[in-house]
Image 1 (cartoon, rainbow, N blue to C red):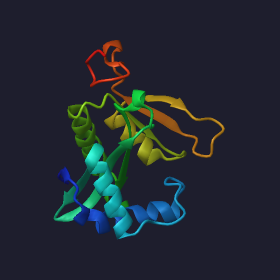
Image 2 (image 1 turned 120 degrees about the horizontal axis):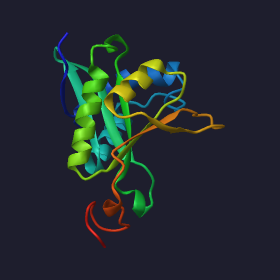
Image 3 (image 1 turned 90 degrees about the vertical axis):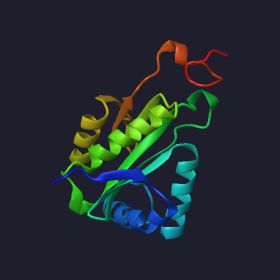
Image 4 (image 1 turned 135 degrees about the horizontal axis):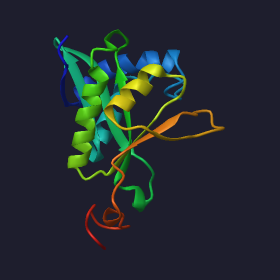
Length: 174
């Protein structure tokens, strides 16, 4: 099976993204949402992610088969070049490289925009997500013991010391 085509999302993709996400909300603990968002809410989320970070979709045979996005990690200025990443793949599309294609494109896009650290967290057990994340990013860097969302934290691209300024762009001193 060929790798899917990955492109920037638009708000017109909201219904398909909501359809992919709904089974995760309704059938797993992964999302921590009490109900699946509708098309309008998903469109709002896509627009918000596109304005500051990224939201990508994967297509195969003219059908949307997965999506990935990044959001702000924390509101404090020192975290502005760190983001949280998520990938969701249609249940019928696991294993043919959809998640890895999305992760690869998303991490490249974020690096080009100056983001230095991407953090993925997941609930466990979740072998499919764990394998996909490890193959696409890096090894687990920690866990959140004692929390409901206990799971590995996966980091990619921790910045060197010269990029850790509290102000300005990555790589610039303040």
